[in-house]
Length: 116
Image (cartoon, rainbow, N blue to C red; front, side, top):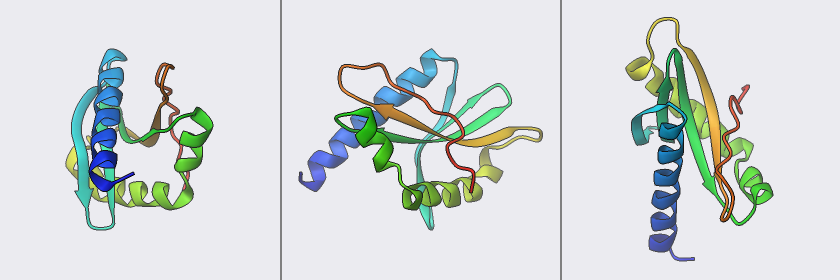
């Protein structure tokens, strides 16, 4: 798959993920937030919870889960640590979540996937 097609698929998956989170009462604060050492697909807030969300779209849920390996989670964790002061409020519960997009299925949103 060429780079442009992968980029377009990634943006579409992130748009679906943002839509899903909004339906569940989350407010999207940022998309594709980049810092030195990492990137976060979505930053979302619901009440006192601030979530840094990694979105994975694959042909199956198993493939999506495997795509979220320790290396990628570590990069999200680095980015979350550097971005938290910008988005967090005192007393927030801060976590790293995943959102799996699989054709023909509702998105799945596992919470707190990084325990570094």
